[in-house]
Length: 232
Image (tube, rainbow, N blue to C red; front, side, top):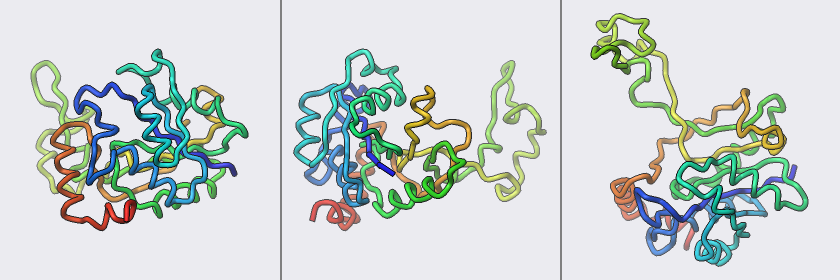
């Protein structure tokens, strides 16, 4: 199978301006995802961006850059849009897309390899998404209806929400560690489809706020080996 990595790096972040190229231990966040893919053995790495500056940084670290139109580079633009645009430039076409986000810089390349292998081994799966177990089950969460708390879905007595967390089903949230997508689904107008493999990873920090970035900086300082793995 022809496996290509696509990294989305839009330049218009509002919460953390310029976050995709914000420097972490001397290197832009974008570079960490490029190096992760390289260390995972992915030969072709494509950065989809709306910025000539970002494209230049991507090329410096060994990726190919695809400039996306402004129309799909807005705050409400979707992953599907820029991935579909990027794969239209591929020759030869790719079979699998490894989708990485610059906002999750500290990854283990072996886990990326494992994700690709898992999807390759399961022909019935339409995609693979990385998830992490939630520290508190979503089934212990509330909704507000007519000004009052009700259990999620409105099906349980509120007193049951005081039960130990072990009594509730585990729930998982998607994270930005790694997703693997079949291009055949993109051609059908879908990103992941309905038969998605879960890929459970360690808890990871996604950078959406300045506080998130400060915490990742702390992680990099406390564990410099995480940075040296990419930039010796």
